[in-house]
Image (tube, rainbow, N blue to C red; front, top):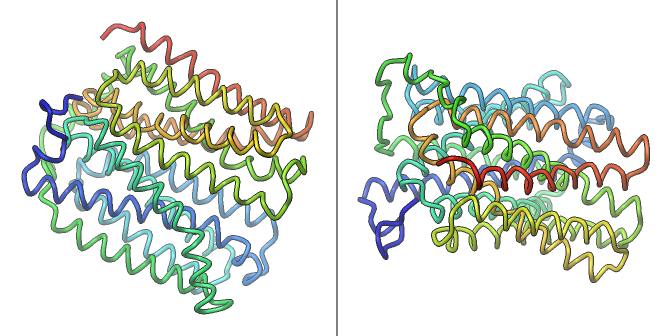
Length: 395
C-alpha cells in the first residue's frame, strides 16, 4: 500500500499506466450511471410495458443474478481469452442488454436484457478493482478514487434521466439508454487502447486457477467482512426510502432526498478515505468505519426528528462509503498473487447483496419494518466484530 515516498500513486506511474487508470475511472463512472439509471427508469418501464410489481422485482433480481454470474466468469475468462477481451465482452453485453430493453416489452427478453446488464456490472467491478489494484501497487488512494468515480455516476443518474425526460417526454428513458449504449461503445474503444500488464493468456492454468488463498486466515476474514458489507449496503440502499415512506417520519415529497443524501455522503467518504487511507492501516480503518457506520445507523432508526435523521444519514454515508475500497486495499497482496481471489471475494459479497434485502423483507412481514431495519443493523455490527478479529490476525 505504499505510496512510494511523498509522491501520490499517480505521479510515479508511467504514461501507459496513467492511461489505464484514467480509463478505469471513466468506465467505472459509466457503470455507476447505468446501474442507478436502471433503478430510476423502473417505474417508467413498468408503465410503458404494463409490468406488474412482481415482474418488476424479477427484473431487478435478473440484474443481480447477472452480477453474481459475472463475479464467477470474471475470474475464469481472462485465463483463456485475456483480461482486455474479457472486459470488452462484458461492455458489449451491456450494449446488447440495453438495446433489448429499448426494443421490446417481451417479458422473457426483458429478463435477458437486465441479466446482460448485470453481467457488465459484475465484470466491471472485477476488472477495475483488479487492474487499479495492480497498476497502483494496492494504493488506497487509487482505489478510493475508483469507487468515488462509481459514486459520481450514481449521483448523476437520476438527474440524467430527468434531463432525458425533459428532452423526449415519455421516450426519455429510451434516449437515456441510447446515450449509455454510446458511452459503452466508447468504453470498448478506450479499453482496446490499453496496454495491460499480463493481458494475454499466460502462465500455467493450474497456478492461475489455484484456490490456495482460501487457506489464508487474513483473506477469509476479509471475505467475511466483504460479505457483511455488501449485505449492509444492499439492505440500507434497498430499504432506506421504503422505511421512511411506511413510517411517515419524513414527508413523502422529501423521502427521495434521503437516498441522495446517503450517496452524497458515500461519495465524500470514498474520496476522503482515498486520501487518509495512505496514513493508516486497512485494519484500523475498517474498525473506525465500521464503528461510525453502526453508530449512525442506530441513530437513524432510533429517532423521529427529521433534522437528526438527516445528520444520521449523512454520517452513515460518510462512514459506510469507504469500507469497500478499504477491504480491497487491505487484501491487495493476496488479490495480486491469486487471480481467482478477487473473483471469489466479489462473488461472496454479491451473495450477501442478494440475500439481505430478502431477509429484511421477511423480518418486516413477521414483526414490522422496524424489525427489518434491525436485521440490517446486525450485519453492520458484525462488520465491526470481524474487523476487530482481522486486526489481531497474523500478517
